[in-house]
Length: 146
Image 1 (cartoon, rainbow, N blue to C red):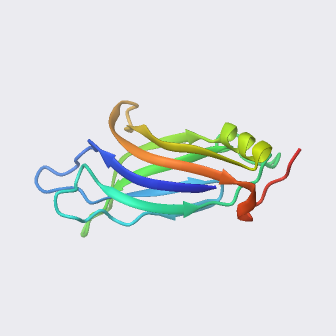
Image 2: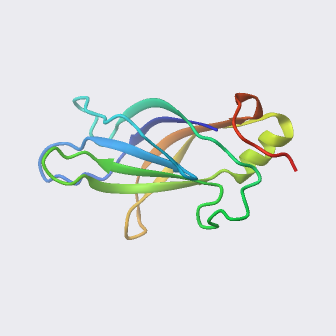
């Protein structure tokens, strides 16, 4: 499965003064990838990453897989801080089971660029993140057809 992280908009600012330096921790199954930090002047709450990440996929998921994480892509948005602990800006969870089902059936499937709302710790929404996802059985990733 290939995840394209495009950018964000309206992200929460955790600084009273100054700008945020956001990055994204992307998790699927036991794999984790971290985007570059959006340092560009003026980006702050409107970062542009334009990065691609590949994840191994098992379909159908193993019986022993954690049901809370099964078929879920987690994107955790963080603010890089130089001298203190990085700040949590929110997260997005994307369910990919139907994408994988279509991909196994047709050889490939794609979710074009979509906007996903960023959820804060208190469950409210603040900002959005743009992500595209594709899955192909021809990429050499792991899958088991039923």
